[in-house]
Structure formats: structure tokens, C-alpha cells
Length: 88
Image 1 (cartoon, rainbow, N blue to C red):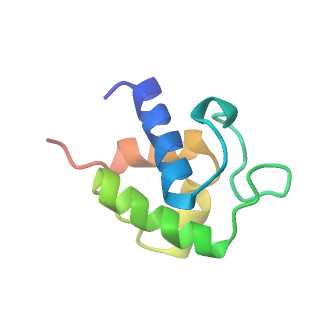
Image 2 (image 1 turned 90 degrees about the vertical axis):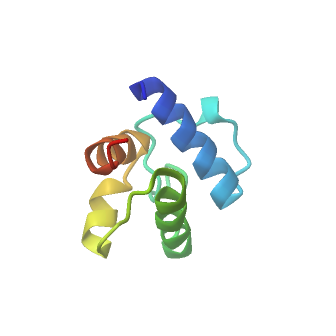
């Protein structure tokens, strides 16, 4: 899957899984997901995001430490999913 397509799919997943009131184009690739000046997601959102990534891409998040670094932005999620996605 092309990187831009994956980013768009991740943005769509964020919006639908977390019920965000945004369009995919309104979420920047480097927007900080958990920062007050970004999307201001919380710990419940992090759990829902981990579940959504597992269901959507078949990529599990083994620990909170991994999630903290992988879930910083759309770009970091893209890199994590690409590195962990099972080959088909």
C-alpha cells in the first residue's frame, strides 16, 4: 500500500474509531495526537486507537512504551504499521 494511501486510511480510522469531528484533510501528518495543541486525545483514546490499529491492520501494540512512541502522529503510526504489518 502506498504511504499516502496508508496515511489517509489511518486518518479515516482515527476519525471513525475515536468519533472525531474532523475531516481527514484537517488532520496534519505531523499533528500531535495527544498534545493539547494537537488533537488532545486521552488515555481512553489511546486504548481505542490500539484496538482499531489491530483490527484494521493486524498490528498489535505490545506495551504502553511502544504505543507512546508509535502513536505520536499520523506519520509515526504510518511508520509503525508499515514496519509491523504482516506481509500478505
